[in-house]
Image (cartoon, rainbow, N blue to C red):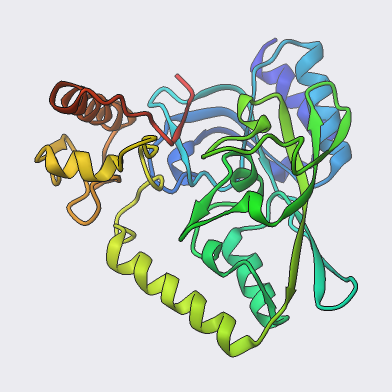
Length: 306
């Protein structure tokens, strides 16, 4: 199907101002890298999402889903077909028995925004996760974690849509959470919303913890440079960043891509790095670690596009 025809069909589903053609994805990723998406479409209702999924299915158009692009590397030639940016951003709080609070969060809510809302409402149990960049949808897909806590520790239910437009509900157990992985990592479902079980706390204590984790992040992570979060997964019996550091790769660069001098687990964009430079550097680190320590390291970031 020609792009002109795709555009006409999209305009029947969402308003014109929600559709961008040939949009550079570096504007929509935290690492500030990425070629053009044929179509980037902002979706804010379930009906719009269902209709677009049906349209892409019927016409065999490739489709990708992104949140705020914090754990993503989009390749230099961009993304073909339709890229959907989910703008579902509602937060609901429901008081349960005793001190328990059920928090219902839509997938497009930024983690930082949820953390601030919970602080304001004096709800604790989310502090360790408060500094993770990204949205709730992305955090569920990869079972994001920090400071010894993972998102799976507070999830009770997940609502997701499959690529036939059918909506499913999953319990925590059914979500098959493991380290930086879940049932949803295979890309067969689109996260819509999540229920968390948290409890009432004291505002000063919640703020103190959040401030402490924010300080740690500022000191230890290269947040002053565009990055896609931790580049590599931890190994089962080793800390990847430590091996990269021991191998003398801290600060090593290819083009404008650099292994951070502050934290060797991050590859940063020091200027106008390309996705190719990031991947070349990641591959170099992988080969060095295998050569020196016989350990295989895996990317934590998701690579999309061509």
